[in-house]
Length: 552
Image 1: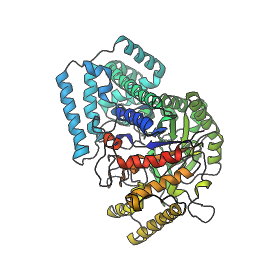
Image 2: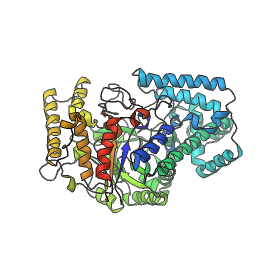
Image 3: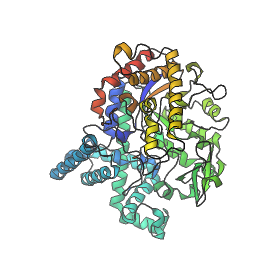
Image 4: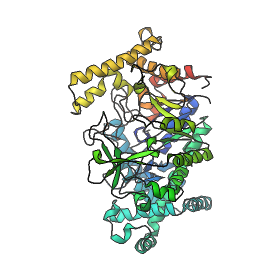
């Protein structure tokens, strides 16, 4: 298969001069169109766009969704909804536009964090206004088709959303009768709240249509893959999926990670696990339906923590993660469902298999055509001398990148800024000098490899390219020397962003999931700025130079 290069970005972090305070599906469509046509990109990978648990303050992490089955309407580009042109109160629409401009300006010009709750409040007001506009006959027919195709799953999801507006986002605290989606009380409430249930169903449909439009645009722009969506490992214990599918979730259990060299206490992610016995009894129906929903608009799917298809670390409620245990799933069946649904959709599957992986997992994935994930800084000869792995020894069946949303940006790593940040936040477990020296040695070792391979030649020095920018180009030249089928550029790396999107292990100390893409000086960069960025184009030229005509 032909190798493709593409961009990786957290969608909320990429604002344009049109989006309402966070990146949206209009921005994604524009990004895909531009990247496909102007950059020769084969794909754009985004964070999970699953529905979040509503109510302020919402959890901004895209990895703790209310539902993985349905997308989040906070990502809608309101002006792209056809009915918006016909709202009965144009004055109200104008005021909403002014509020949107203020939200956008706060992030882009006044250094404010992305405020998902404020964006959702604003968009909900706009969508309430929009909901009063009747659908035309063709749109009505398309909506009815969608309702019929999604069936009970969508009805449950929309009912949960309507009930949450009244009783709050934690269904465990609802009146007893409403805690069961199949009870008479819930049925009565569904009828009483018919208009709100329809409102939330329509929002889901509108989001689905914009997601489909983004993928269609990506393919039209010449991308062989298009949009790579991300499947989170689990759902929020208080959200819509855990209410609608109670029989499939293990009560009183949470998914986490056992103690390891990096984390002596282990981890508790606060996500309820699926029961392997109930999944098997149903013929894996919830997993199949979930995948089918995502493959409606995904050219590829990244499966977060793909080891979770094999086994998960279950932690009993009220106990530390050290007292958890591994529970195994029927990986053969789970992978069969995953690969079958991907094949039906003509889509690629990428497994996130970083870190400790039990024996046989990578082989099982490779045999089924599931790509892995390889991040430059972790690719060392662990079985041998521990030195950086030469490019020709990398695996071909992978998406190769320099970094991810959970790791320091390449500029931060090259300058040591990632150590300084952890020091400022009081997160270092060893002396600053020790951490600094270790990070510097790691970086120096990689730069030495790049220099030895001649990947830093012709950059810096005479060309006037700053050293750090030249080194980032060298890192990507290295990735292109590997046989990897897909090479991903972390979009913030293309403009020298120093800040990570997420700093694992932090809660209040750092603004996880709330930072816009920024340049080396910390100034937010819009989609329009990116298109005009000489630094981004210089990096893409490096990638395309190695990439043109290359057969993988």
